[in-house]
Image 1: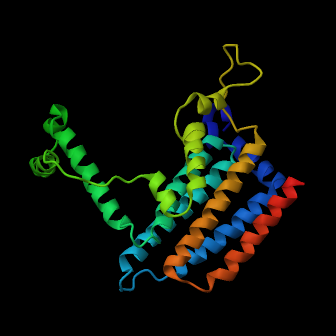
Image 2: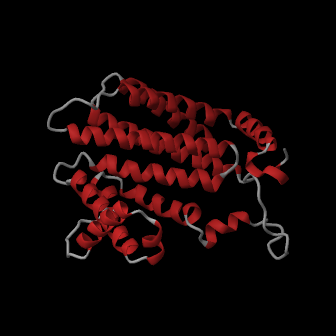
Image 3: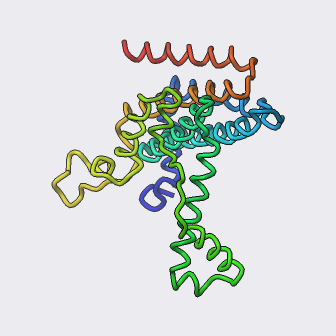
Length: 269
């Protein structure tokens, strides 16, 4: 199976992946070690106990697992030279990390805001579907009753707080990361001119053969993406550990953080 016939699912990509990972073994090595620390933290944390903060602890566990799986997905994409896909997943890491950080603001009722935002989203969808003739013609009567019930609620005025990632970042002291979030939206997650330019051959921009498909040759940006993913995951680990209070994780987190800092320093010299 060649790239021409199977694209990123081909055996050609596996060959490229092995070569790329071997050439950048320092970065993929630290990624593996940080991932192991995060996995242990996720599985060792007790989030089922009761108490005043039980709701927040449960939400923190859900968010952290989401950050961790998105990080792992980003590394899998980076290994294969899929920069856009990796950076899109890193953006997802940031969204969940912003909420994790905001959990520590006792005056900011994040759980209530998320519940209201979810309910408002579902009732708005129900309102739109209830007026869709095609939808009404294919669903069963029970589903239609449930949709109409939510649609009736949507017709009533309701002051629902909005979930703002900018506000979440500010509540968690991550204002600087919000600018990175916007950049990842522009250069990867959304089909902007900037993100689409990745699919152009810089040497043939004015020809009919300028559109290309394959592993990204911009190695420095792939490494930058891995570095960004690592820093976000470590930030999420620290925010999560503040909520679940697992003292055994502190030394391991400190060790991989210092290792990452040393790697950054070596690459700057």
